[in-house]
Image (cartoon, rainbow, N blue to C red):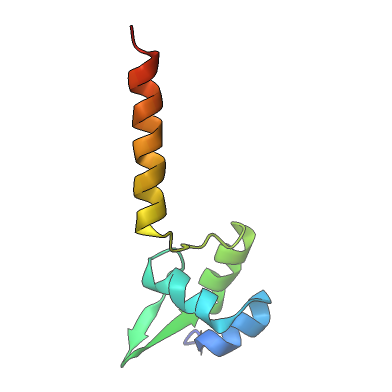
Length: 82
């Protein structure tokens, strides 16, 4: 018997999140999926595993903000050294 594959919209309805959250998680490899043409297809088993893991997701950070934070951390470390 073949396993039924879900579209990102169907998976989002089951998970209770936005379809872009599903697409982002699949794109970054946090949610196991298959590419079918230009779209992702998610198995219901993998979706349930992803939900049980707490629905880990990749969020984009502003690179400028990250660079400023890294710079301030390195400044603090340099000022603390004797």
